[in-house]
Length: 134
Image (cartoon, rainbow, N blue to C red; front, side):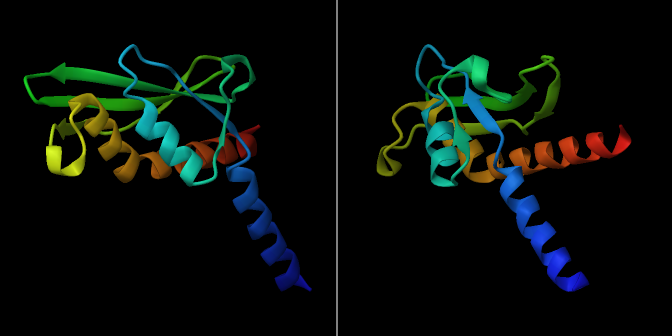
């Protein structure tokens, strides 16, 4: 009986970690699109209204050179505006054979592929540990 309860709780915890609504802040150049595509591909709940989101993902390009850009993403709690996690800085380079002609978009694609899922899972863990302290 204990095993059934434990398995049920573990399965339920997996579903609730993706139950949070995420909003990706729009950028002028549209380089947030790889982040949105990755979230939708991984079945996260994405909202296009900032007010209804639990967390906001902010895409930032720090350096831009001729054919290379560096940037990162940050996840912010929408209720209190507190920064929860920030990704490592990634570099994107324009490469025609990959279909990336826009270095900021290539940078965000690298972040989406390498860091995004881990960051969102760490936010879910932060939320769970915060509940235990209360």
